[in-house]
Amino acid sequence: MDLSKNRIPDNVKRIHLTAICGTGMGALGSMLKDMGFEVSGSDEKVYPPMSEFLSGKGIKIVEGFSEKNVLYGPDLVVVGNAVSKDNPEVVGMHRMGLEFCSMPQAVNRFIAADKKPLVITGTHGKTTTASILAWILHDAGFDPSYMIGGILKNFGSNYRLGNGEYVVIEGDEYDTAYFDKGPKFLHYDPSMAILTSVEFDHADIFRDMDHVKQAFNTFIGNISPQSTLIAFDGDKNISDLIKGRPCRVETYGRNTTALWRLGKVTLKPPWTFFEVLNHHELFGSFKTRLVGEHNLLNSLSAIAVAHRLKIPATAISRAFETFEGIKRRQEVRGQKNGITVMDDFAHHPTAVRETIRAVKPFYPDGRLVAVFEPRTNSSMRSVFQNIYPLSFDGADIICIRHPSRLDKIPAEERFSSQKLVADLKDRGRKAYHFPDTDSIIDFLVAETRPNDIVLVMSNGGFDNIHERLLELL
Image (cartoon, rainbow, N blue to C red; front, side, top):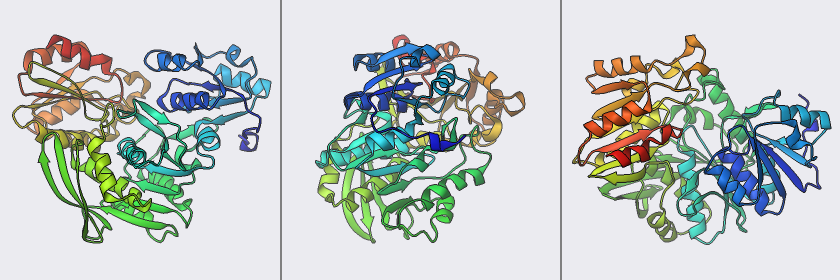
């Protein structure tokens, strides 16, 4: 498709968002409404809490896609990346000759214009890292804007319109739109960027690891020589990608070669105390409620950016002490009869492994019961079939749910939850397979005991398993 037509006019007043109920599109719609635009939207599945949140902001939402939704002639249609070219609104949009763009194009034009973007990229840790950085900037008085894929508990929102010069953006490697199959992060021109990790994921988008590296290679290659990239030094893929770049590169991690290095770490639940070294000298001592080395490394990258923005270590330390975390990232949903139920977004094998590893030390008196739902386009494919068994070693009991949307995957590519359980048992793990959520809840009610931690991992709602379990315990 000729993208030269795909331009945003100057006199936009009325904007329609097709597929508005996604996390990113919902945030964009809300920000546009707050900026004074007349905003409407539609989606296939309109349900709380996003539907109520958007309606409460005065945004008219219609359930279902129809050409009727754009007949009023909006000045601009923002098309979500889950929308196909055959969508009736897209067909109507083209027939009427309406102007249209993708979500990141709209973010660039309306949100990031005249601001300095701080773009957080990587296979893992984007939401947490972006949230930490946004809170540090806010607490230091920078009044930042942000648009992040998770809800910050400090703000109760996944977006903010500030008057400061910086905007924190979670840079997603997923494709942009049906008319632009490149990653979303290629649309942003970062003043500074963070690269946390580069692993294979999104098997529905990327062919293989080389394809993934190609996307990140393009992103890094587009970074201006005047800008700075903060890159994790414990990832060989990143080491290959950052060689010989014209932009300034600062590394962070555990290695002695890193400019920013994680020092001594002490666990005193609910706090984690950690030291940060810069140029081999102590930069500062911090404490946080975040758990796990992976989150300390995420914190380290945010500290590196904050230092480049001349925020003193004392102010950064204060921000960490008051940072309340992100919903669905190691979020304790409740405790009942001494049993803790935790919710986490982990779905990639690395994220599952690191989340279990992080949580375990904070519950030393009980068992860690890992409950996992393969739900993403990658986890429901066999691509990680032989890797997942290595991800659950830290769990005492493992519950694997049969994927509920497996019919969306070609039969020859499907992941087998039964095989995962068999492989886990071969490794000496106490693992069980369940056909549905109800049977998992029944098992947990009968099996768990005081001091246990039930760690639920899924990128979806998991049939509200957390609240239903807490009611029955």
